[in-house]
Every structure is written in structure tokens, then in C-alpha cells.
Image (tube, rainbow, N blue to C red; front, side, top):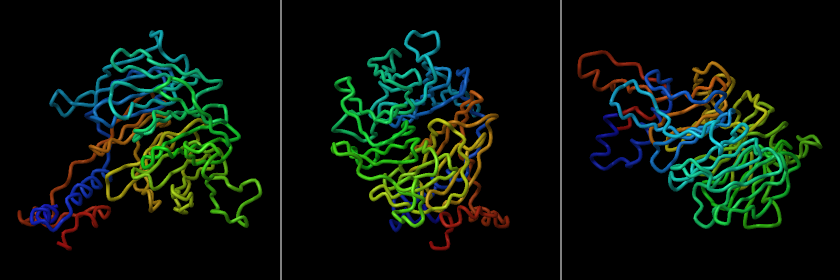
Length: 397
């Protein structure tokens, strides 16, 4: 640690090096925070979470009971033990509430005045976060499994919506209408994601075992379909050609820089793909348990030297190295299956929701004293976690 500070002081270190090293240390030391509670509002499982990116202060949750909650994550008490209070709730008593399970919630990417929710009641609603009333409502022919709005789009206001219908729907918030459908899938669409690198690139995952990459400016179909065998027909059975998994694909997530796409399938496999050409990188994560029949909400860390994937696995959350495939940690704390998780990049914190109706907060452990400081006090060297050895060793300084 002292080596980083002295190197930055004399100008021989990159300004981001210390930040990324500390972020990585915090990421790898996540533990359940027993001093921070999240107010329990949901009467049934928590299906989805989303932390807004503008202030990093408010979090949305959507439940199987049709309830939507806005939480304030700030600690105003100044105490170590506090509760994140609900500052807004669309409860069952509201005439605007969803009738069935809320499957996805998402903040408008550029301010906290609006958010979007979708549900098994075949609707997607655009909400005013001040009045908690829907400003726009879209109705579909079947259950809505997922939706996503581009986090970087400046030239369009499109929301991609996956439903029981195999056609991917594009809704325009400016006009308030469904403007286009993307055809190619043969079964329901369980997950959709816009690229954080290119506002026109969209990925969709379906129960037909395929993942398609689209450019919404093109009307001729998808750019390409992900192939787990990278085009090697000798390794693929006839029915497995151009499939991303050997089962339903129910999870999608781009890496923070948009260079990679992670997919999850009910074949208990997680795969990492090059998002520009669709190549399977063949990173081996081993068996990744996936019992979800709906979309799986997992997340990826950003801003760290070692990016990790947080995947709900039963009643725990498995943490994998994105590029190594190594199981880094297993976070246990829920009493029932975990359905969703969301990473807070500003503080390297993780929030998880599950069928036990709880939202849990995982925070980094306090940093141990530096080896140099211990030596100065005449105390023997302190053992250093091997996971931090590369980032924190001062031998190179």
C-alpha cells in the first residue's frame, strides 16, 4: 500500500493503479454485512434488483408479489448499524401495481426521475419515480420475461423486450409505441442486453438454445448467432449447430467494457464470448448450477484489476474470475434460493435478493494493517492473502 502511495507521489505510477488495486482487494474480501439491514417489504421472493448509476444512491427491487420498492442506500444515522429504508413502494393496494410477478426493473440510465418495470401480467410500465404512477404502459401478447434499455444510447430511446413470443420487441419511449420486431428465435426470449460499448448492438437469449447478436439499424436479421463449437461441425451434433448451450439460455451479461459477453444455460454451463466476432473463448468455469426456469439475473464487477462474475447458485452466490474461470469465493447468507444480484461499482458492494424475501448487503472487509507498518512496530510479518499478492506486493517498488 505504501509503495503505491509513494509511487503516485513521485509520479512514477499510473493514477488509476492504486484505485484498481484497492477496488480489487475490496472485491475479493466481500462478506455479509451484519450491521446493515435492508428493510423487508416484499411478501414473496425478490426477483430483480437495480442500482441507479447517476448517484449510486437508490436501488429498485421487484418481487414475485408484484410489488416494486425504491430503497435509499445512504447512511444518515452515522452509526455502524443502520437500515436502508424504503422511500417509495408500489404495493398491492396501488391500482397501478402489476397484477403478477415483476420480472425486471431498471432505472432510466441518465437520471433517477424514471424507471421501467415488466411483469408476467403481459405489461411493461414506465414510471415517474416521484409520483409512483405509470407515465406509459406497453401491453404484449404473452408473459414479459425481460427488458433492457441501453445505458449509453444518445441517438435512440429504445427498450428491448423479451416475451413468450419468439419475436424480440423494440419499444420507443419517445413515441410510446412498439416500432419494430426482430425475428430469428424459435422460442420465448428469456434475456436481453444492450452493449455498453455500442448503442446499436443488442444481444438476446432464448429457450431455443441460441444467443443472437443484433444491430438494430439493420432490417435483414441478426449479425450472427453464437456457436459453442466455434464452427467446428465435427464436434457438434446436427441439432446442436449454432447453439450457445445444450439447453435453455436464460442469462446474459456484458463485461463492463463491452468486449465480452457472458451467457448462462440450463445445461449448468457458463460461457464467455468475444462480443465483436462471437468466438467462444473456451474459459472453463466448471459446473455452474442453474435451476431457474425464468431469466437468471447475474452481474459482473467493473473497475477492478480482476473482474469477477457473481452468479446465483441455489441459496448462495458463486464468484468466478471472469477470464480465469476460477471459483474465487462463495457467498452464503440467504435461507432460500438467490434469484438476483447487483454490483455497486462505486463502493465494490453487492446486493442480493432471494426467495426468502430478503435483500442482503455484502461489503468489503476492513483492510488489514500493512506489512511495512507491522515491521516498524517490531511485530513479525503478517501473512498476506495470496489473492492480493500481485496487487499489493511492494517488491517491485
